[in-house]
Image 1 (cartoon, rainbow, N blue to C red):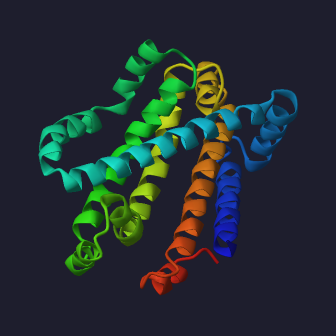
Image 2: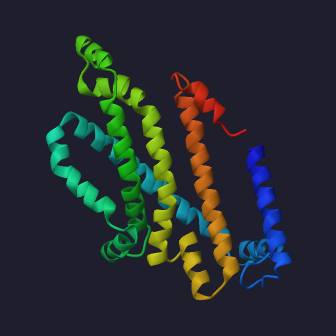
Image 3: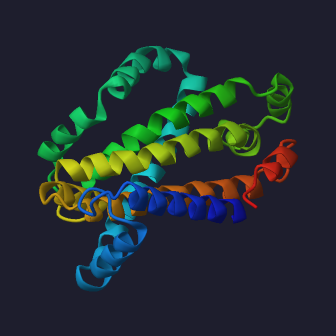
Length: 255
């Protein structure tokens, strides 16, 4: 945390210095003080923080749905390779399609509410979770699977007691990638059409040439993504306390 604060302070000083030295007009790049004043005005007079929960809800809902579906699909593929052979080309096809092209279709089909944004977030979260979970399931020690057969575990018991715990390191890696993509997907959906949210503010700032509004929305989006990433890191370290990689994870922990 100290390093993050120091990095932020250095960035703000450089920003302030460059704006002053090169005399950049405030309508192009506002100084940190001007941006702070803009953020305060938006918070007190324009209901800025009423837009934050909208975007956070879309991100969290889509992320949870994409993660759960990705895990279940990976388990299905690991146990039924024929299903993977049939569905994998379709999954790749959807994932390689530009998300900015999918968003208008979802808006046309599902309307301007939160649903199309949640679906888009779930789509972008699904693939990294699926890929990592499937790799994890296929790299489990065969001796553990043999033990499960000896103990006559049913498929659900084997998943809960062996496969899922052993897959957690790679699963969290996929979830971390997914949560960063989720923020982008939510913004894309809101840029295409929304009545509220940080992406809506970005679109409004672009239409009115309000650089300050755009920068405030971008900073808030970055903070949301950063906080979600940190929370996943905390959950990862706690859930993997039993794992042999605990020491390596602790070294990477935020100070």
